[in-house]
Image 1 (cartoon, helix red, strand yellow):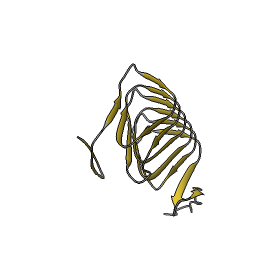
Image 2: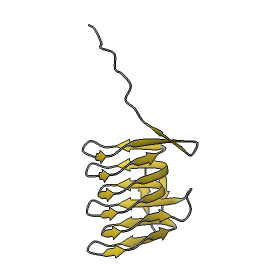
Image 3: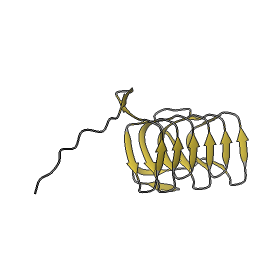
Length: 134
């Protein structure tokens, strides 16, 4: 059993360290990746699919799921319909679409953050910060 901050989710499948999968992966339930995937990774059920990407894992392709716990490397666009946790060693090269985002110190994104509002992507822009006077 894998426990996260939003409850507990069973991990149904594992791609182990030292394993390379070439091609698209469609999963149900929970998938943990410790190896390398060269291709698209997507949950069959857009509302219930948890992907865990470990520190040693690498994905080169698009990712679609409802929950993502990420601490490895993903090169490609990511769409997460519910909750994303980017842990300290997470690296993303590509755009990240999300509904709820938790980002730990040290995580890196080279791409756009796109907030999912009612299924529509909205680019996140930094608001102007007013200067505080003492």
